Length: 234
Figure: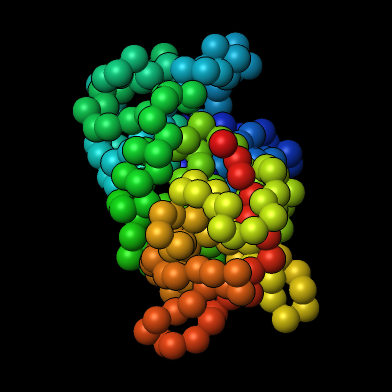
């Protein structure tokens, strides 16, 4: 598995092979193969009118109910044409009673804290983007999606975004940190919090200390990741 597509996210079919389709996700241009039963067709007009009206679910899991379906919606899922209680996929109207945030909505610091607290202890899963399993860049991508900020899928791609900080003492909650492996390549990422701590997916979503050298794991009594850079996205 290279990644996951969450409910409500749109894509383009690049090619087909039997029951499988190679797709490109609009959110981050990531490509992969998906079973053809896992997505439905829509129109360019629907997608165009959805722009700016897509909310993002803040619930770990919450039901969305229509006349035809009763679906579990995970944190980070997109809710097109959301009006505060209802959203629409093509002509099908769903009722959604959970918390959601609209793109560009104020209060990023509050949303940031809420989302990270909900994802704490979620297990690590290579390619994962949901509360039931995610990798380091999947974690940062979903966190920033709820803030209305689109990030690429992989950590080295994400490191190309934002404004670089010179010193870690300049960092504030919501900045994103990147770490290098022994070969000097970007291989890990996480979200800076207050009090010189960082939230990141390493075995599970966890909070550890961070300083100018990197992430210090208090349980293992060692540094687990070497700091390469810190970027500011908002």
